[in-house]
Structures are given as C-alpha cells and as structure tokens.
Image (tube, rainbow, N blue to C red; front, side):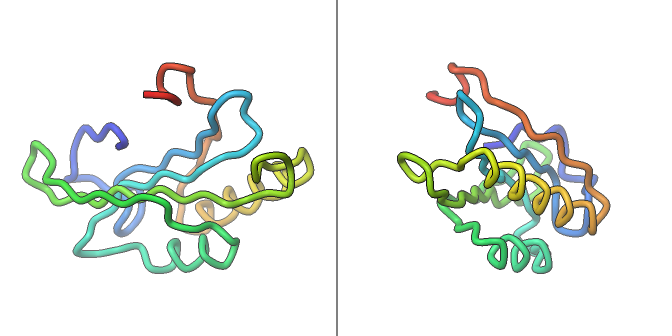
Length: 120
C-alpha cells in the first residue's frame, strides 16, 4: 500500500500516487498505483496492459480523509532467472514506463526498495 497524505489532490486524473520500485538487487521493477476507484485512469491501465504488465494485487480502502482508494500493483515477467528482467529488458521497460506516465504529466523515479520494505 502506498503512503498517501491526502486524496484531495491527484497527480493525474484518477491517480493519487505512483511508485516504480524493485526488490533488491533492483533489476525487475513493479508499478504501484493508488487510484480513485470512481474515476479510474483507463488510459494508464490500458497502457500498462499493452506493455505486458499484469495486475497482481488490488485492495480497496477508505483513506483517513474519507476518500476512496484502490491500490493496484503491476508486474511484468522477464526472461532472466525466476522471471526477472535482464539488463536490456530493464532499460527498455523503464523507458516505456517513464513514457507512459510522462504522457499524463507524471514524472516517475524508479527506486530500489530497502530490504525491510521489500519483505515486510
């Protein structure tokens, strides 16, 4: 679940927060979205599907400010061990993610999770 300060501000229509993160060692990234379930970001969701990302988790909740939130997690399998991404796949996938979110005005900064965060 992404940490949201508020549901009164969106980064783009239907999107409260975006996180592009990988578990250590940081070659295979997932896309984590906190969205407005009443106004889903259809363009972004369709774009992720076109890029081969699959929804692996979704959870609805009501934020402390009473706004409804739908957390979505997306993963894409690669061709490396355990379906991870090889270096060239990582570069291409991150560029595609950055372009997709850039088209709706969101700058993403891919990051590697801490061990505690990744395995909590």
